[in-house]
Image 1 (cartoon, rainbow, N blue to C red):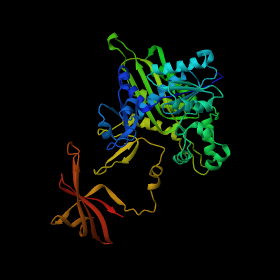
Image 2 (cartoon, rainbow, N blue to C red; image 1 turned 135 degrees about the horizontal axis):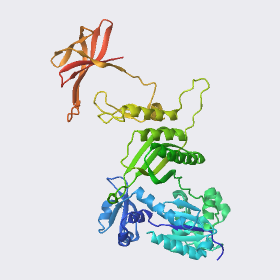
Image 3 (cartoon, helix red, strand yellow; image 1 turned 180 degrees about the horizontal axis):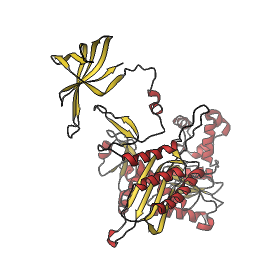
Length: 516
């Protein structure tokens, strides 16, 4: 057998195997031998997305509804979980990385790897394939392994043949010949055309003359033929693991002073920022964890202090991050000395900003969080109602008057977040609110306002709309209940439109504002 360089690991019925791996290990074998289907789709009509061989023997097919599956009896049902599939795929990648530094994730449950130069470590290619298969079974997979001189041939051989498949160089077309053409990346229209010609296998497609095939199916048809012949050669595109920006340091002797801790924090932040710069990244979220010393044997693990900062804009500035950490630690007290410190930076793309030639210089946006941290040290983090004291106010979706919350500042403006839904051409009626609301007196005719006292004079109500009654927070001291009216009043300058309301708890009328 000639030199074979690429291998493919293919996990059939991958969603089902991912669901099995999510169960306790002692139940894997019994679950594999039981009919199992994975359902996906809307909650009111889930359908079969994947199934195993025992389920196929019962006559279950993809696309069947949950009710149809339940009529078969004894079938294990699982809901599709993307998290479980991602976890299983990561486990498969770990298995492939044990045998090659060049690994390409082709699709969920399918991995390609380059075996060039691995002979000294694992022996012959045949032995390497067996070791890969055995290692994958140890990790809980029932998979197929194919080895060939190019990754595409290994891919389709793994999808089409069970067990371990070895394809020598020069025998690609012959070995792939029995496979069905629907394994290829083919469109339904092209598949229908090939079936009308009687072409149903790789061998039949490979035997077609190239020029007439290209004239009828174009370059796409010629590419499919080259895949069927095993003539596509390419290099792998290895997947790079996302960089992990985390640094930690464990003290030989636990420290108690801020200066000793700040010295280590400065060094760790310097290393983190250097890594971010090297990867052309920045951070907008920083996480700190301090492990405290265990003073008694019966305490087990020591206490931990954790805090995180969400920055309004990404930064690579070590001094800004260090200042934020110091300001927080100055206000904190710990029950024991600090034994270990860990810092993690969440990486994002750096902020690109261009200076303005004709605008005066303004403070750096990265310094905003430092100012906010100092303000929090004076006014506190939150008030008695749990609303943050520092940040950007935002109106909440509530009928309660003046209801709002405070969020962290963000570099995304309101206009950008509104997107296409905002239109400057839309007419707007503004209500200019009096703060505080003006106490007033209202004379009623039946239940509707007839006269309203405004600016020390009673004004006749020309038109009234209402009432709109609302209430809330009846379960605590912040209870409120009000009855609103929109009224048109006759004034010295003409007609004015106002909003009045009656506080039903205090039985008092107020003038809330005027419409423009």
